[in-house]
View 1 (spheres, rainbow, N blue to C red):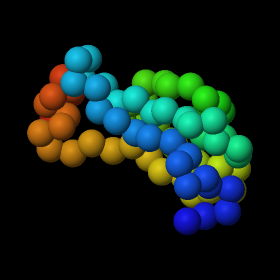
View 2: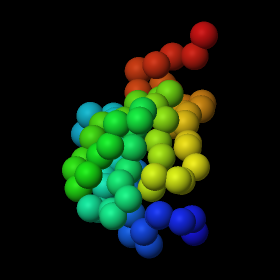
View 3: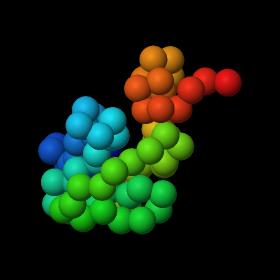
Length: 78
């Protein structure tokens, strides 16, 4: 719970069909942001390293994948 974040604000889902993550904003009143760009009532593909923020004053989160998930995305570990 955070100010400006709706109860059903957004969803982050893995799309097995193209090995990607999709962020869906549910027309939240204060928006969802990917790398400081607002997503409003839309779905966008997000990648590791993208910065996600929910609401205008919400905390920021970096999308990080570890271990086997990177292999599934074709991003081998060095």
